[in-house]
Image (tube, rainbow, N blue to C red; front, side):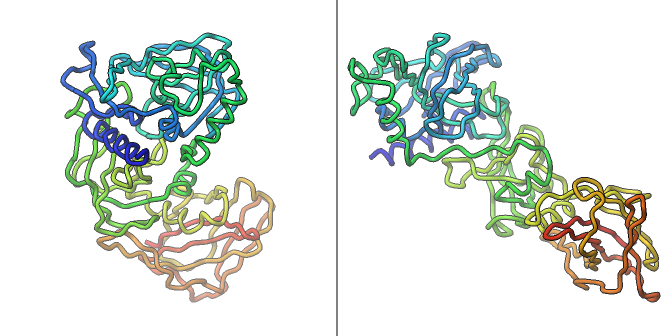
Length: 438
């Protein structure tokens, strides 16, 4: 029974995400969106009833905290700030932020319970135990360490009888523990809740980097897609303090990473006005938690939407990410980027490189040149090894740390239309530079 209830709650929550652009995916089941928050009107919501024990099964994080302050957030929300003293479950940071809508009144189905999210009361210096759900969407403008509080559930560890749920005494909603008992200790509460949440799903660790290598490596899906018809645009719904989004049906053209196939359809959430129907992009994504891979979102707030011009660099990362971190390579007299250098179709007399980063001054164990054929197809670009290794290559380093790579065969030439990779090996790690013969 509990499992069915949780599934229904999550499905209803996603209806809000798709209909209104609101990211609140925890307790709100249905919303009467007839009144816009911009006008100061109250939004009426409803949710299924949960006991204390049932709602604990939804928590991604359980923490003991001390209240710091609260402040307005946007036009109709409040941000509460806490210091985390102890983690019972989950990976919460040392300082966390909890968000509550000021204009939503939630009624609990088949009961006379009604509460407002922002009716939370905290005292500075008091220790509280909170059951939270991590705000995992990357399309939110909340703090990266932001949470929803489940059912307005606040446990006062210094006086458990003052604990509340749905803004009512918690003792009315707990079935296995008496919060009014004078014998109830802090240790008993922590132990009991630790057991309740032992098998919960933890929140995912966010990608806190804007480096392309980090994003590609940590993303379960990297896809070339074509933007299809919109499922819901930001202009279709109610204004939100969290962030405006568009949802598009997107066609998978090529799956660079992950178990999808060309032709699959992904319901993708984008920031509003960032893509248009018919465009092609590369996206690094993951399923939105609780949607059974029905909706997908970016894997980082920083940037998971890429142009096709970045394909070669992404292919390189996917080919070599298992080799460890990639130091930078500088090409002397390069005319383009530090990853791709265009050359003429001439003899390989000498190519000059300079390594930077962690391998400065180190002697490579090998340098390998490979010849690739680039094929553009309906499913994207593929680099195929024509010559896995060109054997007749020599190399040397001068006093300035500049490497010279040269041909040992006078008749060897670059072939126009081919791509070449020059790879410097340092044990089980390597760095690479791409050359395009024109």
